[in-house]
Image (cartoon, rainbow, N blue to C red):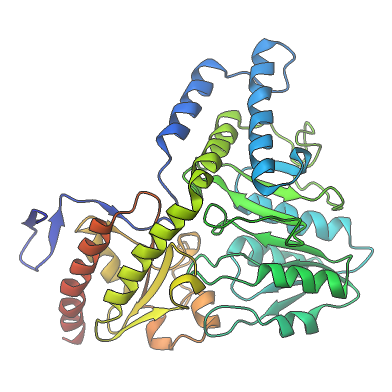
Length: 402
């Protein structure tokens, strides 16, 4: 039995257990990642562009990271471009390819439920004279391949579709989309934002006809502030950051060597026992969705079990505002999210774009919580969270009705 102590006289409690279930926002670093980064920061801290031994030490860590990531994706190391994270990788993919290929066409395609890093970049490109088609999704958050087929035109220069949705965990038919795009127009580039899917699935760009792939380290138990863009060697792309010409001239600025090496170590850790780790996550997901789904007035959004991502669960609690439930859970040591963390700076938005796109009832848009799991999540934490929800939700509904 987990020992708890009362807080005030409202039924709220604080627990000695800490349950971090906001792993789609960010993850705890693996210990091996933090240890490697500390070693490099304190001992092998040279600038990788320097010609002396310290610089060569630093450069060797960049080479190590490029080779690890390339081997994981089964691509060439020269096709890996280090960035400051997924947002920069998405910007480089969309803006860099739009400007580099604008003579061939000015039409792009993306979906209605992309991360703001893609959607806001698409809106910016529209302001610059490009045309963007936004594909709708079904009630489970998936695009229809027939819609994609109809949207592709001779002047379509790029299609951008996320691998895994960050709010409801929906999985897109990436391999089928890649085949379709290349069959209709082999010149059209295919970009995949894999920030939420990488580390949970094996993603092979060449086999899946992916030309560009964005990844962020802090979603896979690596450090914040670093990521990469895979860009196939035939992709025509322009830089969006200018300076000293690092990363083959595509991303200037002194490379963040400790973070880049830490990201590579996180990739090694994530994929060492991937299948077993993902099976465990799906088990936790099934336990959570089955039990929370038994509660009255509760809707689990998206598809069940292995038709969705193993680590993301979106749940709507009728009659309870998400912010109120979030803070009530926080007081018990349970940390969750009211939608996308990256969109939380816009509280005036009436529900997330993703929840609106899947047709969620308007009354539930502000009553939805995202629970997201990681390699560190335990069954004990899941059961503790379920117990808290079973106690808190009825109580909060009573307060709401007063």
